[in-house]
Image (cartoon, rainbow, N blue to C red):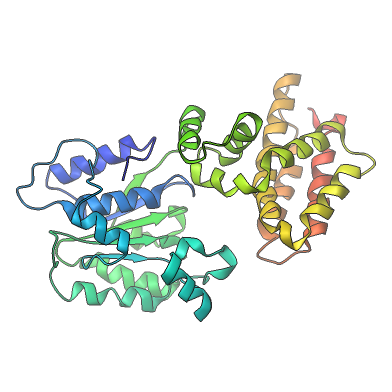
Length: 346
């Protein structure tokens, strides 16, 4: 494994705690989704599983050996001292797919809504014996935000009375929503969004075919999170952004652009593009409002902010409430078009 770009600070904090013999038993890896927190957790897990008493490891970073025993066992999903807890598939068919191809192969609608209490209780099998081949036992929960209430309470018992030499790495996209009793028993390690230059480097590594406007659109939509940008690669985001900007610039008084956009994104085959548009639309509107305010030398109008807030709420509830795709896109387009009106500038 290689280091995740932009997370040198997080690695340094974790290593210092380890090197000083003060490694906390539970860490909340906190930050927006798509920053690479789960990848960091897996790196930290291998580092701990590879470590042993008396081992001479270079300072700073993890310096992982891709050929080590732990690396091979983790890749095969069979390390006896490691557990990865994630949401599973909704049906037996999807569970089989997850076992054969990994949970990441499942689409959002194929996943269970929560991590169950049964999954947390199953960890007791790991804690019932000492570590088999490593100094530590490591549990990664991705993401702890997905725990059902009973599962959170079951985990809390382990955090209150941690099993010996067991480290919990808890990925969280919204740590403020976690139980205060869980937060109080963990050390929070915060991950910041990457800079535009770091995003360019990251995308150059993981998506080398991206160039020019398409890459720039993905960087903007990712908002410092490479994982978020990757979700949009197959969605033709540059085209969607161009159409949205045309609507906000011209107002699309004859409804031609928004009607075409709504019709295209309402098709079943266009679901990934539809979801990509929902994800990026509020950000595109916010950028437009900010640019308009800067250009006029005035503050953003309260009306423009209200429009942005309505669009954000609509985009957030569209999929969970199964709203009509075409109606949602047309309404979002109408809200975007209203930003072209003269009174949107204070």
